[in-house]
Image 1 (tube, rainbow, N blue to C red):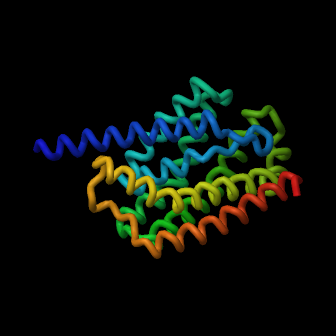
Image 2 (image 1 turned 90 degrees about the horizontal axis):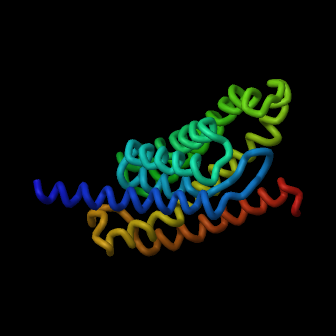
Length: 219
């Protein structure tokens, strides 16, 4: 019983740390992309949280972060809160569920890919449903923006956060293990696999950044 209490306390500490880091990502690294859409890397932190503890703790943490965002740095109000929680849920839950079933790189990547697809489709529907009312625009005008604006934004957001999740997971878990905040059974992979992940991840990250710059007309 005492050991379970220690574990629960450590879990709460880790979740609080994850929430703080995710909020810092929102407060410090919000990058306007198109219209009211902004990129921030918080979902990669919440995905790591989900892969460690499962989808429910990650969703609860995302709600806390979204609530803090709403009352501090955001100007989108309750609609923005719902958008943030929904987007995170669609992205994080598949990765968390698959990785909890089998803790290896293949499950993590497959889960993140599924999450990226679900998030992109779900947010397209959300923007079709809510944005005309939220922005005071005709629905047809929003429909015309779905493919050239909302679709690439959500794909790039999911892609960047997916790559960052894969790159950062081992470092985060190793750090938490050294601090004795997560059990030693948390999988971090071997050295050769870690190097391969970094090389592949950095290549995909560079490609995504180039696509984003080209889309913005910088290149």
